[in-house]
Length: 123
Image (cartoon, rainbow, N blue to C red; front, side, top):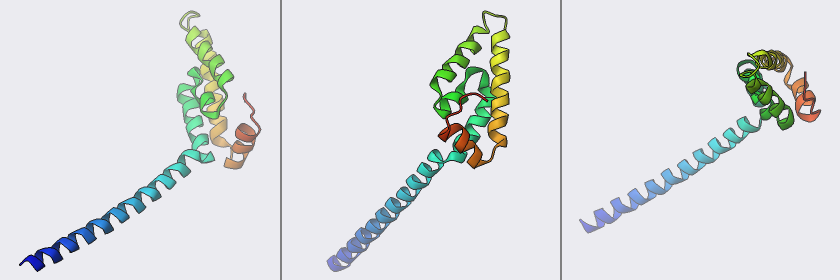
């Protein structure tokens, strides 16, 4: 009986080690895939385009692309709309919508060359 318990214990340990290795491999594959998605140019293009259309008046899409000065300008203009009866917010919103559409209609290569490599901040 003791020998059977030892064999069963060895089998359980072996199975647990194999399961742990499988989990580690799966976690590494998931990590590499997630890094690829986060760092991909297409992801920034899509994210910046959608945010430009929906939250363009806050300049969020500018911050996504790394244009902090331009993002702050749009954020201030958007928030000044509370004092200017929405005029500056509307202007900021129209700029965001136009830029969002421009981002989404460019090819991946054009987007990368223009906005990420070329650092063109406006239109």
